[in-house]
Length: 357
Image (cartoon, rainbow, N blue to C red; front, side, top):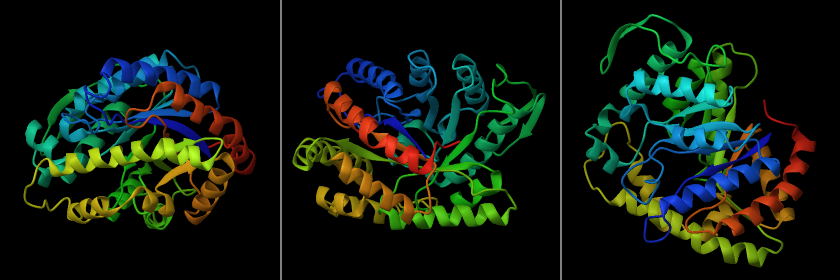
């Protein structure tokens, strides 16, 4: 099992400049490698303090590749619905080359209504565009002289450059939270899954079980690969950890809720559970999230116990991506938490479970 770090900006210019946020994140990525973290990940979002500083994960990961030597670089995730497959395939090949073959590519459908509206995409096309985009990108990376006539994009006899450094291509991850259809499709494609346990380990287990059952039904060896992402803050005492983390966790979810509520429109057929998710976010408190295991905040001993129970309830997890500098957290505070976790938590799980492939 591998621990890594995730950067998900939830700030605007009045709270922290993009220059400060990304320079701090590069510093933390470099330190993270020294403290035993195995990957660095960031997202793609637009136009809002919820994620809006991170419009292109590949740009940040290219910079991070030059500040690190061994960490895997994971897009968590890129959005095919807002990117031409020819452009995205070329960028993936380029980053795989720059990083000497350390890239892993996570794809997501996108879920923020304001992004669809502003970028001129229909939420009702989300699933179809996603499936077509991922498959076209896969072919462009694995094959030469590719011809594809899709519903949304078509091209003839294209060889994408640069060719991937990893053969046949970087590993793919599919982001999924509530849709069994997405989990089954990931297994059918032979891809890994990344998820956010918004309902705690019980909800995560349902996602993972659906994926693994579909993986086995396809006759594939092993169980596939699973990554989860959540907030983490580690401190010498429980009181300090909760005092420092609580207002920033609350601000993160407030920003997320505001992004969801910034556009009110009809429910999309591709997002039937959105209203329920928004309602659950509105009602949940920091204490609820602590109790349900949605955030990991505490002493090293408390976190070891919590993580061990979470992993066992989920039937095993391959990668855990920790959000360490959420909201306006200063870099030195995020580093202290990350260092303590790296010194007193990661070695315990490396001994217990070993490293993830």
